[in-house]
Image 1 (spheres, rainbow, N blue to C red):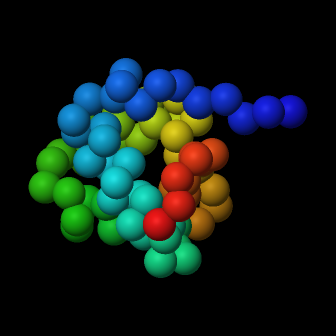
Image 2 (spheres, rainbow, N blue to C red):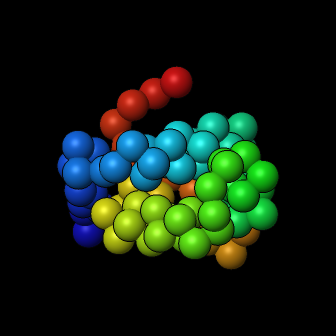
Image 3 (cartoon, one colour):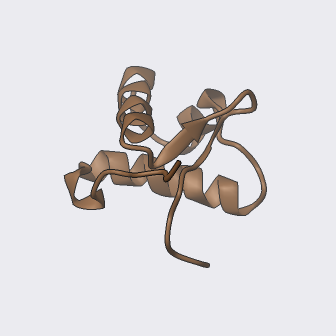
Amino acid sequence: MEDKRADVQELSDFELHVYETVAEIDKAGGAANIDTLRNLIDRPEEDIWAALSHLVSANHVHSTAKGFTLGPHDWAP
């Protein structure tokens, strides 16, 4: 099964900010949990959850037992 993801241009600036924060944590070998994201992003928790929900539904990030990680992507650091 091929993982398809929505076009990144469909994301809001805030969703991109949340995605980039998850990407930095994932790049370091971790998973972004909500507490970490709340500490790194100066927005209400509800906004972060809404952004994560959209990112997961668009297949840009995955929800795991440890937190959020990157979904399929075609870039390299």
